[in-house]
Image (tube, rainbow, N blue to C red; front, side, top):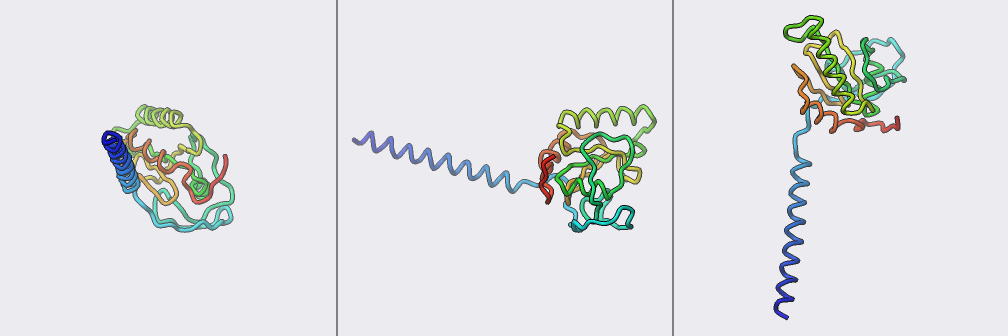
Length: 177
């Protein structure tokens, strides 16, 4: 009889211990710092193609945008912000790059950088992911999601993976693409 009561006590202590551990882990996960920096939300208004507008970051992370968006993929030509911002609204992550900002520049260095980004994007899965050159970028690489920005001096795979896993499909407008 006493051993049954002891087993029940240990069982309850184990259950309480496991539940407490799970709650603590959940709290730690929820309170972790998010990758990149927060950028103020400039809204979700649609504007006509070609309409002049200003944004609060480069690259922009929210704000007035066109009715059409850019599909997932690896691009070799710049794309207008109005299309890219609409993609962010749909939960895309955009990897913008500028080879001219790379230390030691040159065509070969740029090609290696592009290849590294492309391979990483393929490995992450291209769904809701865009890789695109950005001639006005002030660093070699910037990742954007809706109201989030991460600027990098190099391809930092752990930071990129964390950003993509955290923010892909987390835009304010959920779509099936």
